[in-house]
Image (cartoon, rainbow, N blue to C red):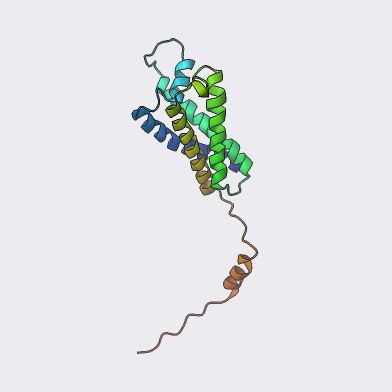
Length: 174
């Protein structure tokens, strides 16, 4: 169980790095007025205004990775060390997007509810979360140490190959 927890946290952090790269590209392309992690940090720090405050970038990065790792931990625990199909990860990313963009962000006043938000921004965030879920599953599957058991069809053939002694063929004399 501890290994699944750690794998989920590490997988969540790796997936968050992928998602953060997409957010940076979207921000530079003008698709986001302000990335969500920065907006949340700005709301948390004391003082108002549009100017960046000391510690804002550090706090937003820490919070973003903490949230991504904790969400990854949940899937890591639910997977119980088994291989997770990629569509499950993509659906899990959709679930995290729904929780964050449809629930958490509007409830704390960080962003407008979905119907009143800019469509391009929401589409970008949705695509990012789908990417995050896919990257999470790929990381979890790669970090997993237990391998799936051999199928009943393959196991006898493999056992036979292992038991069969291999004798080198004689080299013809010249």
